[in-house]
Length: 548
Image (cartoon, rainbow, N blue to C red; front, side, top):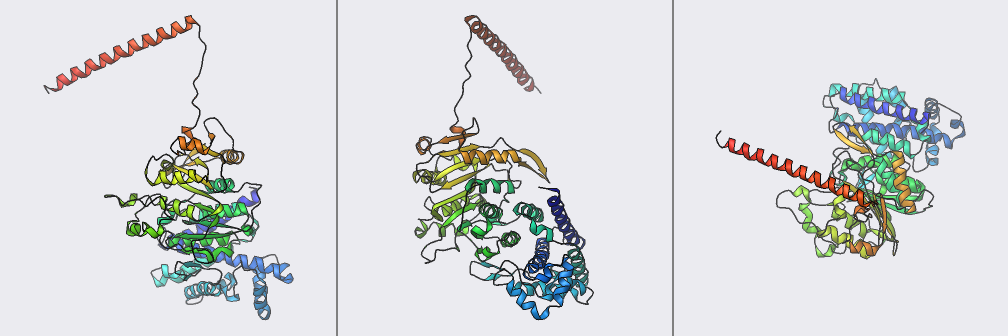
């Protein structure tokens, strides 16, 4: 990353900090409402600047203007041709009316009820672009871009000053230089934007996936020099979209269509923002807010079964209470999808129900005949010797669709201490080898707030990706095994169980051997003597305690 890119990212972070400061000054810092305000305002600013950036490309007179302010002034004089200009914009750019622009709001900021104008503007932008810039519920109801921001300020007397402070910050900043950057820059900005709000994403997005892990998964699924076109990418527990975005970038945003579902409304709002920032507006209609397990939203064209996807990525919640609909999932009519069974409801702690096992089965069922998948799982899944875990692994081995596993360092996710591994599935790996990687010893420990997290260095990321791409065997790091070897080890996917046990062999003369034996004998005599002495001291102390 060069200095210009760093400067752009830092300025964007400053804007985010300033918006959060305004929220804090108005008494809603760290409140449940703050993320709604920050994301709506940030997205409004992004759409405004992207509109000005793109509209210059469709009009040669506007293209001659350097500053966004000059473009805005010119647009105000083009009322007769304005609608024609909007028609020439591509579908990935939100269409804005003159009165939607930030400059227009800024010029009216001293109006008596400015906060109402601000809210009405956001809502009108959402309605004006609802056909493309909306996600939907499982019942196909469209969820609009914006709902207004002043509603989150309780005191009416403070609403105007709040809205004015926001517009003052937005008019000072421009996203224009950021549009020239690539996915990596937006990934950093997005991660910074939501860092204070990713603690409570809801059931299906329990753990925020670090960008480094998402990049590793994407580069293993699609090699750096591999050409992939016209494919589908799916995440049934999408969260904020880190995994699907990384994979889409690896494939090429124009070469894939994204499909997701997540039960958390907050997650879907972040995901929509993420897609818009990363030129994946064409996939917004496939983003669904709903329960993937009970009401899967994506079906094939004939509606005869669930859709099958070319690539699936998922970091599902590991354990949560789904007792409310557990029996529904265990119904015989769903046996083909949930082939290994459904976890029972514990007598005491329902929150420990292993819901991730349901997602693994759903993913296998939703994978196309030549599809590939990557799933984040608790490392304990790799070696469990009974139950649903083992049945799933047996199916992956019997049908020869396991490609490999990477066991990650502990605390790679700051929000959970659970050790995790990434399971790679490839339906085309018939008769192939399986690569098991133990990356658990990699990474540096860093402090993030109250949590300690392990962060992989760039060279370590490259080592994992390279090892997988070249199917390299490295002592105590990676091993390549056959399906038969997996069966011999009860379908264990733990790399350590397949590493060669090395015994150091040293040649000794008879004299050296006798000397070693004598040393061992002397040490044993010493240890036995010390042990006897300690035993006597303990007995004596116990005798003394009897008379205390």
